[in-house]
Amino acid sequence: MAKFLAELLGCTLPDKGTPPLFEVRISSSSLKTPGTSRRKNAGLFVSKDNMPQTPPFTGQLNTGGYNKNLYQSKEEGYPGLFYHDNNLVSGSLEALIHHLVPTVDYYPDRTYIFTFLLSSRLFIHPYELMSKVCHLCMEQQRLGDPQMRVRKIAPKILQLLTEWTETFAYDFRDERMMRSLKELTHRLANGDEVYRKAVGQMSQGLIRRLTVLSQYEEALVKINATASERLTALKAKPQAAIQRDMLSICNDPFTVAQQLTHIELERLSYIGPEEFVQAFVQKDPLDNDRSCFSDHKKASNLEAYVEWFNRLSYLVATEICMPVKKKHRARVIEFFIDVARECFNIGNFNSLMAIISGMNMSPVSRLKKTWSKVKTAKFDILEHQMDPSSNFYNYRTALRGATQRSITANSSREKIVIPFFSLLIKDIYFLNEGCANRLQNGHVNFEKFWELAKQVSKFMTWKKVECPFEKDRKILQYLLTAPAFTEDALYLASYESEGPENNMEKDRWKSLRCV
Image (tube, rainbow, N blue to C red):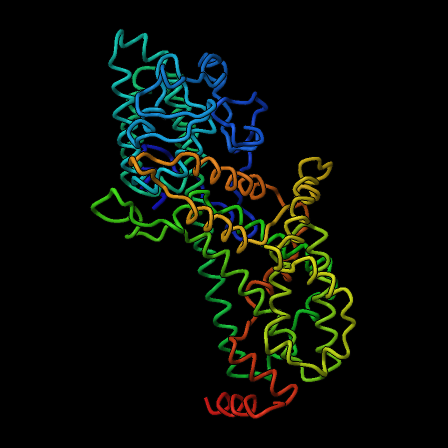
């Protein structure tokens, strides 16, 4: 795919280089946030610095004027946009598309670019939006003196395309997107060396991101295949593999927590902001055809991250249920309690919750004799921090504290914030379900999408943090590929460790042994 897209854009494909497993990362420099002033239409945001942004082109393109984010009022702008207290609250889809396209004396506010590109896919395919943007840009070029307008508008169009390709790079895995991009950039670069160089840099950056994404997806397939093979081998010869457990690989909770953080940040970094919208996309009531993404799987990296959470939970439960001796099982429980505590201190709430979830699985929680040997005070504290009551009030308080620490961080370690991902998705889901996408007059409810963009932009900040800890490949490999039992296999192991206590458990054990 990447090779085809490179040929389509007329670029040289970058070297494939190192496999992506904990090595290749999209550079965080592509999401740098220049410290600029507040904007009028960003009223629902704490600061525009929180929004994903692309650095403007260098001075050679003389773009200083439009980088001030000139703002058009409703009287000046394209008709069909409605404001309240200088905040854009709604508009027709056509008007919002026009508001995205630069003119000679206007460049869209960057919070608007991010918010519209994020939310527009609920109403229109990205390739259709790109086609409309290209058409409007070409119309702008044709107005008045062609040479003069090209010099004034080309840098702005290039800046808009750069914003799009850097923040929503995955949109360009669609061949139709690449064709429209090539058509527009060819017109901009034709006959001008400066613009041709800028187009080349943008295209190379896009191809590089898509290549790294392909490498990552290939690595995930291999990891999952290896994990499946090891589970099959364990089922075939359980006694041969049972001696190899987490404690035999590493008995230091802090080191294991660090390696879990490596995995979390790696997988977070490949989730595109659009996946949060595409995961919940439904049929647009004004679209007589079908949902924009009914024929494509458009949230695969988000789903892979959720699957990682489930794997870690089941792996923890497997590690606890496998040992034959009660004393060993108790030691494994205490070890993972310490790992969870270190995850909390690091700011890795996702691994923390996965570990707690694994310990609370029925096959583990029923091991009463084992738990009687465990010092549970630390576990009780962790459970209190992740208590779901009052809409996870305690966790949300801890998350705010970690976020504030990240903002004022003096070291890279203090910047780490890895949210409990399932709850983040739930929050976005209820925001999406709780507010209509369109108002009664058919206009797009842009107030809703300002808030959606605000939540996603927090994630964009968290996901670009580089992990400061040294990698231990042996531990990483074990965490990713060690056998993790299914629920039935966990129950069977649990009953063999501590026999059934009632008739229901006895019946279940009997049925599992007959399988």
